[in-house]
Length: 251
Length: 83
Image (cartoon, rainbow over all chains, first blue to last red; front, side):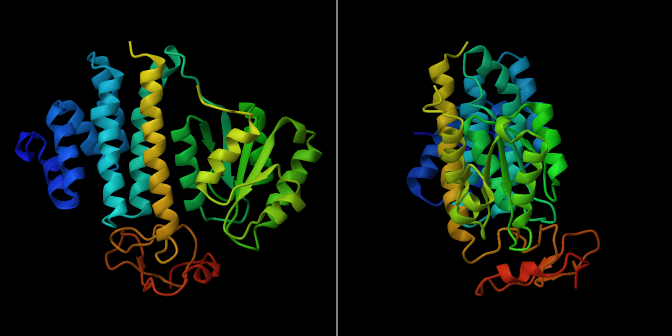
């Protein structure tokens, strides 16, 4: 059984000591990091801090130096995200910090993607995501994007306050078969319908499936505006995206 | 070279991790604004009645929500400067 002092990286030791309270989780985490080489511990530490540029550089460096992708994932990216998940569950950190860590994870995973592709693990599909015109709320959308990327989708994030023209442009450019729109205000919800109308006017409606979500949005509202699907939360968003693209299982 | 199955297993692990994070985020958002960070600062780009000027210039605005009442009606505040 490994000890906390077997972990070389001081920051990782502190994180475990300070934030991981459950004995089983603590021991499992210690065992993992005690086996991890310093480079992997550094990747995990940068991920926990939400430093995406550092994760990007360290991951690329590790793979370039011949470290296996599985080791980078097991002892760097996934191990780091594991601590993030525990800290979040215990309310030591909150959604903004978690999203920063997820962005750091994405930066590292970008270097793993060619290896996934070479092994035959292809992305499930491409999705365009954005918050509609006039709306600046993005947390729900960002959680959906985190989940979609984790599930194997390529996601193009158009951000907030996205006009119908921007959605159309993105679909035309990327040929994405799926579009997700989010709105959080009752005053901006109608802009989802306007965006769908813009797709009809541009003669592109049949080329793309459209899913919608956001706190005030309901299945009835989605049906009325002519969306192809409604997701009540980020988990439902992934299931809906798979369903709309006809994905049964990732493999 | 790792196999497809080995890589798939790691991706499934990441999906599971994110799913548990999202589930907790949903639960937590019933009482605490999801835009409020661990330093009780507001990360939202929009106006909110609970947003106050930062104590130090250049820092994020301060969130004064008490996490007891539903914070969402406060978001309907116009998207202009902080109170």
